[in-house]
Figure 1: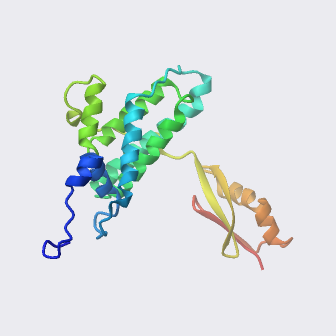
Figure 2 (figure 1 turned 60 degrees about the vertical axis):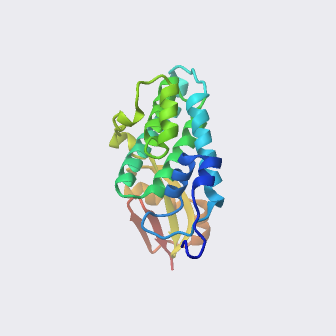
Figure 3 (figure 1 turned 90 degrees about the vertical axis):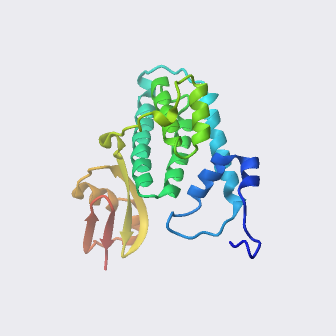
Length: 234
């Protein structure tokens, strides 16, 4: 952009139409902080719609499901993604990886929305509170407005950053690609920590793997822990 070429884009119109927070979030989201990116406001509607969803989720959604046996799986899943999101957002903000901060928060918003009616009120509210605190550096005006409407004392920007539990942030399941002669033929989901023998055994029994073995005995089966299973057949 250059004033002499007359192609300078001022933010005034965008702020008037979409708001300063939507513009701020869009600028963080469009690319890696260290890369040059052509300015294009066509994608700004996406961040605006996301912030609208967050607004409605934090201010208008009602949820009163008490903790019981039926909420346990949803509570566990919601708390896991909450701690994973806090961990990732904390790390990525420090590393100036703002685009992945926004994408992680969008995924967290989806998870909270999906948990409505499934998770308990305690887990649901805990996740919403975390989302609001994470939102503060991304959309400071909107976060302050929501904070005030929720009846909290001034100001959200004086609150402590939410902590995360590394154990709770860890995945319970892992997805392993299974390769036959260098090509991915199937994928298998296994509990994290599955030992090598069990991972190989499950992988070799997959229908698509059996199909490509064509009755032959593998000459080699390699398990890269938590990454993949590679089958070699001659």
